[in-house]
Image (cartoon, rainbow, N blue to C red; front, top):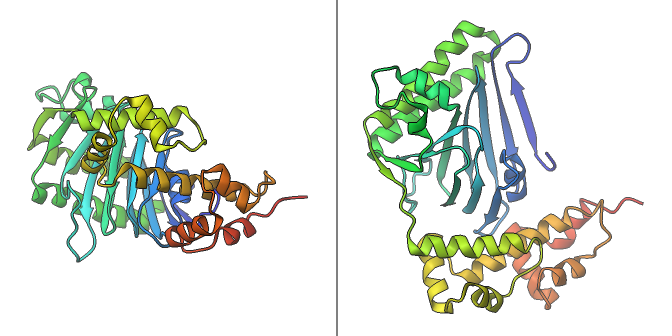
Length: 327
């Protein structure tokens, strides 16, 4: 995992619980830490991103929390085989406009997520098999059938219920930090059930509804699929409009409603993030900073450098210098 500042692992040996902590100093490390090859992370706010990811593995169940100093857009598939239960909680004393604080989301296996996270929030997630979820609820529950968890649905909880569940999970994670190495299989099974109980209490007391995909969401998804098919090549806004057969105004409204930013800014931030990844490949390519800038659609080198410095807190040449070309 290139560029990660520090990784601390606890609970090896004979323990059935292992946990660790990853310190990040850039969006690209968050992208590398996301357990899916289809993940896309785009940094939105200027400045060097700082973050921390804590994770634990408990008898086949995974639990993790992440905090980030800068706003990002995250998109991808969490897992093709497992259920992902997500919690969004507020960690900053300042109030944010982030929707879904205190709520719980369910992503079935293979279902794509897309979210914009603002600074001052923490995202927590559970990863569990459909069989474990069904067995936990038992035969007398509407949630005992694995097929219940395979539909494209979401669960609406009130903020107090969601925050209470997240608080319990954080407390359990803190205990793993201290005692994971001293716990065996019986304790691991207990804590696995305690984790599921905390998450499922909020779910059992919530209202389930089918996922509704609005017209703006579909339009943004089509735009992103077009960008995905284009690989690393920059896409001009006119090319996108022509392919989607929509007006500039319609695309602007869709991006603003779904992601909170206009499409032009989305494209620019995406190109800057791609440029940073290219510059970090200095060990395997002979591209110069100017060539990387032009490759990503920036003809004005000074403007590219200004955009880059504002977003990542350093000059593009500084990024390249830390990843020199090997002779």
